[in-house]
Image (cartoon, rainbow, N blue to C red; front, side, top):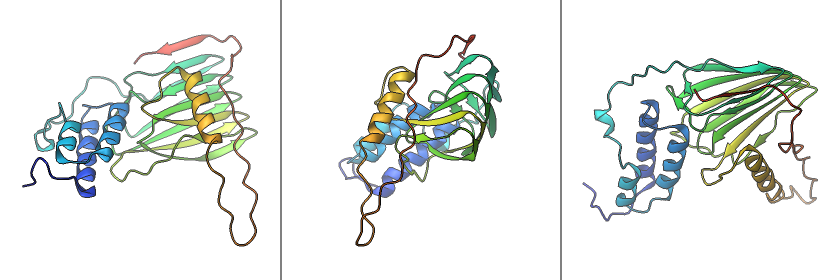
Length: 238
């Protein structure tokens, strides 16, 4: 058995992250809490540091079968409205968000997730949908945009033991933005989007290929959160 002062190995860190994932799927952690502890696990130097990461959590072999009376979040959206969906949402295998002539903020940082893979389908026409996820959760984005765009913001960090959210976006003259939010980035949605856009602009240019440098590909158009036209506002604290 490893001594308490032994230095942690990469395998030890991955095992700790896998343990955190099990607690996430059992409902003991939100996505943001999971992301924060994952940062701490990968920064751990010793086994003592890894023990601190698991503070307050049972051993995985003692985890009870997850049970919750909270209904799963299946649909989020609006028609000619500004909808804010946040707090402890409960995600299962799939959920749908979107609308028409709308502005939807879907904040998954405090969400609970029950499977290693969740599919989020976003359908929007003449509107905007912003999806906020913690940085250490794997997110894949695919879909089709007609007369609009669907940029991704923030660091795309690959974590082998992280749950995955698959975002499938279909927009008609609409915008779907996916924001990977670091745990240490506080503020409202406007501050978060401006901060991530500033970080993206500061990324170093791509190295030249071959003997001649190629021009950098065009950066996605920045769309800062701006004052919206007055719309009926719906805030859900599910």
